[in-house]
Image (cartoon, rainbow, N blue to C red):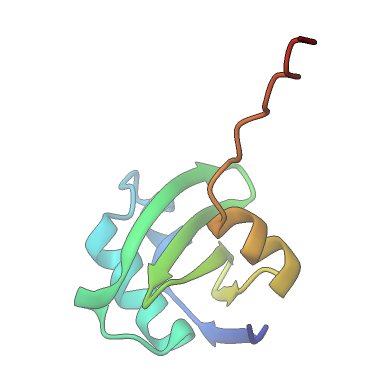
Length: 102
C-alpha cells in the first residue's frame, strides 16, 4: 500500500472553530477530497475531533484510510504504513483453547 503525505492550504477548519461553528462531515469530505484524491461523495468521515490546537478526522475512500489533521490554515492527510493498514483491515482472530487430553 502506498503511503503519501498531501498538504493544502485549508481556510475553513479553524476559521469555523473561531466563529463558534464546528465543521460538518460534508466540509471534511470537501477538504479531504483534494488531499486524498477521491470525490467528496466517495469519502466517509470518522472520528472527527476538535481540539484546542486543531482538528483531526479519518477519511476513508476506496478501501484506503487516511488520517487527517488541520492546524491554522494548513491541512494534511496521510495513509498509515502498509503493515499497520493490514493489521487494521484484518479481522481479529479468536484464540483457540487447548484440546483436553484424551
